[in-house]
Image 1 (spheres, rainbow, N blue to C red):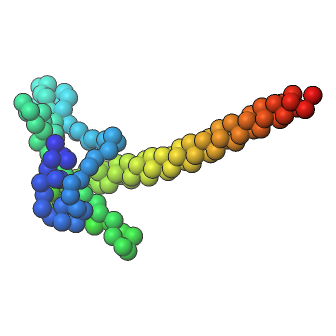
Image 2 (cartoon, rainbow, N blue to C red):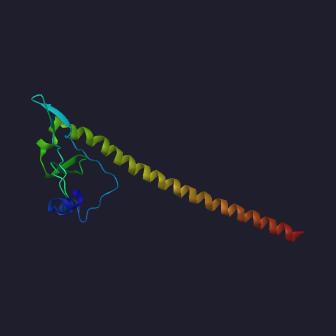
Length: 144
């Protein structure tokens, strides 16, 4: 749903290009819900992201776009800076580990690629070594 909103937002597409593609990495913050006491009577708290028949009521959808200065420019599609700062900046606190995890995923993917290339080189070297050994055996057998 978020990707659909992003791919139909002219401002986002102008800055980031089209079409946008997501990754398998997902992070959600759903708050609220549960039981509470109000005037000594139990009551259900409403959720901030309320499930509807086929949709969610998004209170905040923002994109942080890296700039050449090394800082991020935040563009809001739904909500604003006040919504981002709700709960004493909880979303900002949750964002940082997600960003680090995404960076680590890229780093791990790069390391996996390097390891695969090194393994392929070792396999080629091993095949060449075996071929030389077989050639040497055949040459020794024909010399006799």
